[in-house]
Length: 390
Ligand SMILES: [Zn+2]
Image (cartoon, rainbow, N blue to C red; front, side, top):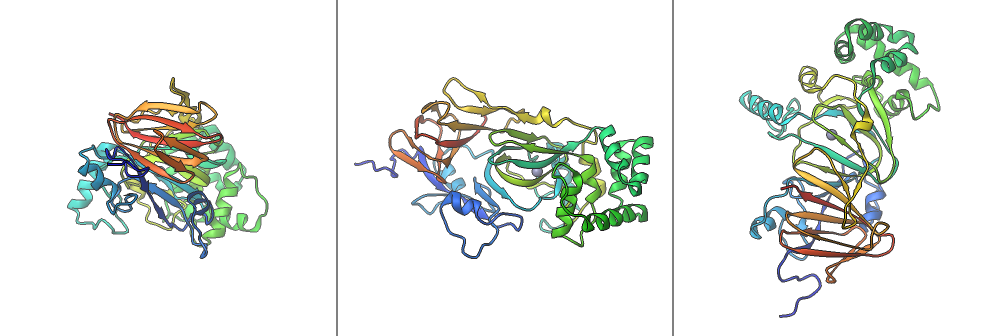
């Protein structure tokens, strides 16, 4: 029997097809250009999912079988991650993810209360935590953890009408001030939000390194949603350069603001929101999940570690998964043994796997345990490899 290029008889390396998610905040051209399709209607194309998540599972090319079913058929372990490519045109909501115990307890509690899984006031969609890691593909802007208290006070100092918030911060501390910023029924909070919104609506050309730039951008798109805009004064605003990574542990407030990235996360949809959202904000639950103390984003920025085989690994404290970049600039042939399910995605250029499987820009493959890989990278090729950690 002949073994063709895509029909590999042992099925240990197969091409897969991911799924595009058309969320409203996405750009219109980046994913079509990357994946090689047209988007004549210019609908937002926000995320490309490569994984076994039941909402949008990848499928095996040339066979009508979902990735998860294929893994079971091959008696391989399930994926412990969801790999995504994101194109963020409009800001995502400020959010935090629970830890495992909080997710388990919250999921059970809301089930016991009879809150439907798709109800607007449902916080916990499953019983899992949601560690997240991202590698910037472009200059990438995000909010990440709380600023130092002195910095928050200085920002609030600039606006006389925010004095009530600054006074609480300096007298009662960060947690009290942050809770006050989220007290949407309080007339003091409403007045601060309204005055700020009014001032920013009238202003032009703000500096991208200031919270006001992003609050103004939010209000342009969402003129009626002021609840939560004060949160931006509390959070570190950072720009990640292409090729650099950053991760979000549970309890850390964050929001993606602009740019393209590769994101690797656990299979979970547990999100509590704190602003920049027309959706439900459960302030009490949010405050109980959030780590309300200043953090330094540099502690969460990751420089890739070059491994002996040439791959650039982004090492995090997460135990479920790992992400690596395979870059022709490091090495033109990268070899490894597959010991757990892996997905590789070709972001730029092209590469050939074991002299049989060609991966062009935008294509991806699933690799199963037991395979020995030699990946030949063409000049300029960049691929990403996600794998289960044992
Ligand atoms: Zn998140």
